[in-house]
Length: 175
Length: 126
Image (tube, rainbow over all chains, first blue to last red; front, side, top):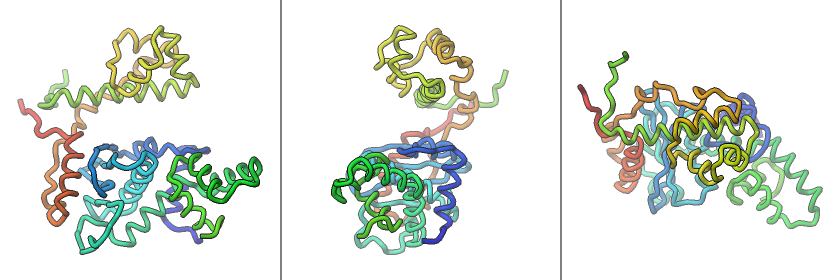
């Protein structure tokens, strides 16, 4: 996996802010970049949005999902704000079925992939994940693959699903 | 006296945000000093839950307590106060009609109700 703009951006932020251990303080990181995080309960698949208002950045987060998913949403929206400055507003859904019909407030596929990649790299930095995995394996060598993913997910305060994808993408586990 | 920035119409929103910012600064100063909520609570003769409420901005901190906490945490009281610029930074409800024009109604509601939580509908001109 080559170094993508999103990976470098996330790594730089973590280095500048001297974040050295999980869980990554994503909210503080977003705020350090000038974003205001606004939580709102809204039942449905609307997960969040990124809005530029003058020099201000607003990250909207739907609290109808789990806290861990909200952390991912914040990181994802921060990715949009840092990388995709062609749009004032980008809206995101947790489930997007039949809605890819050129709505201008939706990110393009490339933008969504980039924002997801940034979020994964920010919340689950490769080096920290590898270190944690080694520690876990030393402690409980016999634990199952699923248990291992769940434990590391807990340490990084991300969903088990997100950690599973991350470990596959880092070629640490196989899908 | 600086007077070119009239207070916003919805002063309460600004006040709520001010106490949240003070709370965040108290929390940051406490963590920098490597002090737990329980330890701080004991030092200033309060309960841990009061400190938690105060850090969340739910409880409005009295001035004497702010100074006391600053002393305990080896910080300056000024470090715990937000910048006066926060009054200039009040967000006025932006007109999002163009950006939301082709968005589904539910998403439109979500975005607007979310932004409304931090934005003021108008700003009183004097």
